[in-house]
Amino acid sequence: MTFLEKQTDPTTPMHWNGDMQADYFYSNGVAGDKFFKHLMKKDTFLASECPKCGVIFIPPRLYCEDCFCDIPDENWMEVKSQGIIRANTTAMIDAHGDPLEEPVIMALIDIDETDGAMLGRVKTEILDMDLCGLTVKAVLRPKNEREGTMKDILYYEPY
Amino acid sequence: MNDVAVIGAGMTVFQRRLKETGKELSYLATKMALEEAGITKKDIDMVVMGSAPDAFDGIHQKGENLLDGAAGAGKPYVRVFNGGGTGVFAPIAGWWHVASGVADIALVVCEEKMGNCYPHPQTAFRHIWDPILDRPLAPNLVWLFAMEMNRYMTKYNIKKEDIARVAVKNKRNAVGHPCAQLPDEKITIEDVLNSEMMAWPVQRLDISPPSDGASALIFCSKDKVRQFTDDPVWVDGVGWNIDSTMWTNRDLSFPRYVANAARMAYKMAGIHNPRKEIDFAEPYDPFDYKELHHMEGLLLCNKGEAPILTREGVTERDGNMPMCPSGGLMGVGNPIAATMGQKICELYWQLAGKAGKRQIPTDPQVGVGQAWGDIMQMATVAVLRRG
Ligand SMILES: [Zn+2]
Image (cartoon, rainbow over all chains, first blue to last red; front, side, top):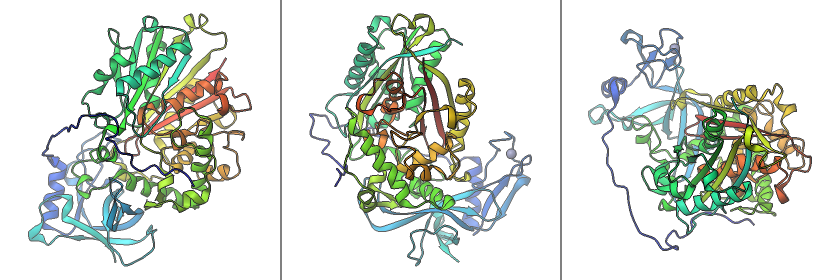
């Protein structure tokens, strides 16, 4: 059996306890505002298409990182909030290494009609660990509870 | 551009938490490198510090805090930093100090003290994500790599046991390393496959441990190198490349940023056929699958072929193309930037015939080292050659 490194007591050497307290407001940005304002009213996503190379970005962006050009308003489009799982994990532990009460399925979902993917949580009755290729759709908060953040997308489920 | 040689290297023991402060660790590694090169602080023209996020040590602008331990006080000194890529990027920066002619002798020191971050250094990684799109979903780094590992396994139909082989090989390779945190002569594939499931398909023994440690390296111009050695090890090529943080738009099965960095380094080194012209490699292995991923990114085999070559023994220390003869991050430990010790110092020690019990038996002449960092983004590559 091998040595399983988990946690050693960090208080063993003589030490002083400190923190680096700082709190933040992160603005959504211009593209983010547009995406989330749309999501507060509709059950679809917004994407944006580069006028030069034709790549369709989701989450939508103001510019193409390759062509390095603007993506004008007329190149924004509405797409269905659904797609196919490209990769997933079933997490048993949290960021501290402690067990989760319930496993969390997180997936990268290729969104239909776009060239991009969204990161999201998945809920399903399927017991397989590997969910690659599964078609899923977003389950959103009730409209009157949406606040204009990623948390408005509760999770994705198979359809 | 001036030719640049390596004349000394040093490395502290790696451990989950060491009593020494970051600057004390830097001092220990620097002292070893100076002694190996046979020089003192006054011979050093310039110093480069490599250290990853401030949040690990818990000191904002930690480069300034560390400098006196890195022989940097009163000298031209700069800290470079690109996450996990730092361990190879810092020596690249040291190389250009000398290649440009600005310095004759440059010292590179890499330090990381992850044990300061409480209760676990993973906490610091929670803040590297895009604050609008990713962080509200509360992902953590292990989950992200689990998805990448899944994608790699799915695309090339790779079995978990063929990935676990890398953990076994590297932990066994680390047995001869005096700095190693997790060497294990007796570890088996079953041990890895039976270890705790963290985030499917990633298990406890698929991951390198967080660590405290430091490493150091000294570069010298061609004009001065004969004062120190008759058998120098040269830096033949360097490369670096980065993709955007919009990682969700990338395929994840192949690290194209590694291939871009490798092509840059090989071109500089005059290498046309890396599979034939490179004798061994130190690909970055914070996870076992990453060694395979990076071996492919370094163009040392076809896509999806690395697990097969590993199964056939090609990447063992006495195989045709040894990978991570140091024991890598999986066996020696992962104090982020300080892994310069396995990725570049090891190339120097192997090529100079100073690797002791870890010495590759086939008299290697050319080695490539690589690091990777950020969210599936950054690659740093260096090619070293003997004589
Ligand atoms: Zn474009």
